[in-house]
Image 1: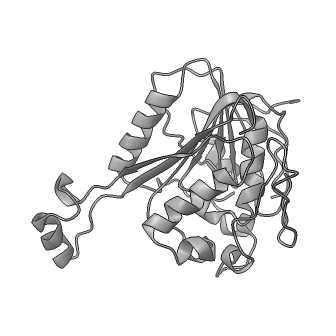
Image 2: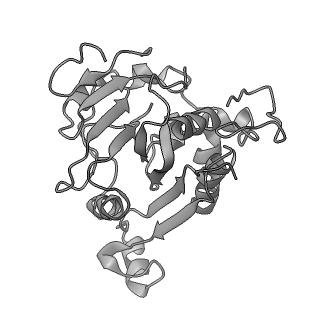
Length: 267
């Protein structure tokens, strides 16, 4: 679910016939940042590095029709979407795959998907249209500004090498008052995750995503949701969990989500 040069939008059922600024060597000035502009850089050049320098499109040349989190994580995520998203909304599922984990009973006006593998995206029944783009090569989204009620990014934020620019684009395409939900766990493609994520802790990763929102002028103060589960549903520090770890049985995937809204006025 990483984020092939820009391509036209595609329909998951049929082809679609028609359908700020930040750099690694320049620090944006907080005094000049407008709504949607980047106040500061979060990552150092070293923090953006990956162990595998090959283009992400090569890594995702073949479809992976698997989920990247366990059932407990998915149930929690779908429940969060059920609480925060509304029927009739326009939804952008960024860095998506063959499944979006949206509540099956909720009908949205449209769901636009983005990812790296067209075959995966074409299998996603919730997508009305999709496009393929490597966000580590080009962060600009070929989407009209202010047109989505929600932007979602699921278990993929750890692969972004220019997250400041991507989050600025998330802000741009959101309607005023629109919500952005970034969820993740502790699973990663190790060689493709950036150094700042790969070498971090659960706490530092939550702080990292929080800072991605905070570096873009106009996002509201991020809200953090954590749900830590262990094997058998016991608390992470329980004796049962300790026994399970002793025998090499891992607990359930932890759930983290960082949520922010596009403010109606710049903060």
